[in-house]
Image (cartoon, rainbow, N blue to C red; front, side, top):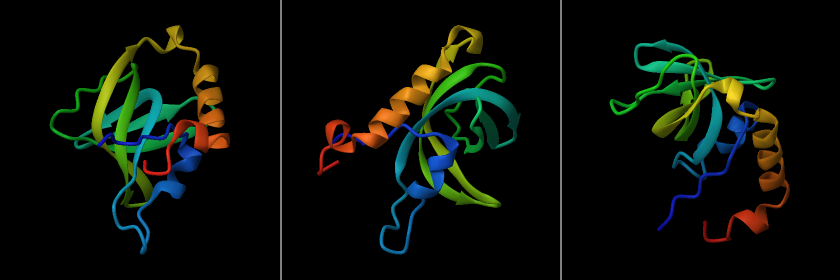
Length: 121
């Protein structure tokens, strides 16, 4: 079974938090620049959309100042919602990435869910 990972922006986090009817954390995908690393957490900055706290795993190898595509599960953390990292891909220098394209992809996948996600996903 494939893991469905909708692409999100920080403003979408609340929609993917576990609820009383669905206690399983929801997997998501988010794209941004690592702004800070502090112990077992990191801050991912999403241009023009704010920041997200990432709860790192032992296998997380993030670098400050680099763009990363992160897959993780939305979890409650002190102060709101965050993402427990399942995996991350280094996408290089933020100056070489057009974040507007990612914003448009997120917009389209949320607008046309039935095209991108099947009912069984």
